[in-house]
Amino acid sequence: MATKSIIKLLLVLAHADQSFHSNEKIFLNNIIKEKNFPIDEYKQILSEVINSNKTYKSQCLEILSEINGEKDRKYALKLFTQLVAADYILHEDEMLLLQLIADKWGMYKESLA
Image (tube, rainbow, N blue to C red; front, side):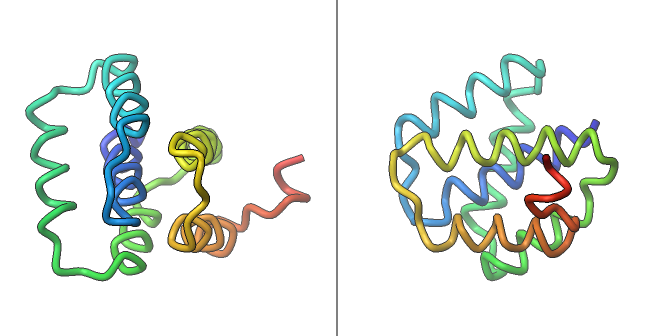
C-alpha cells in the first residue's frame, strides 16, 4: 500500500487553505494510528509539506503519480473526501485536488459507481 504517499497528500490537502483545522489533525492522527505509521516519519513529512517551495498543484501531481493500483487509489480518494469534510468547508484548493485525481487517475463518477 502507498501509505506514505497517501499521508503526504493528506497533509498537502490539509494545509492547502493555510490552516490546519483541529478536526483535520484528529482525522490524520486516527489514520496514523490505524496504519501504525511511525510518528517521526509523519513529522518529517509534515515539515517537508510546510516548508516546500513547490506549488500546491505541483505537489499534488507529484504525489498522485506515486499512488498506483485501483485499491490504493479508491482508499486514498475515500480518505481525501473525509478529510475535506473534516473542517465543514469546501475550499477551492480541495476541489482542485479532486479534479486532479479525476484527470490523473481517470476517476469520474461513472468509474466510481
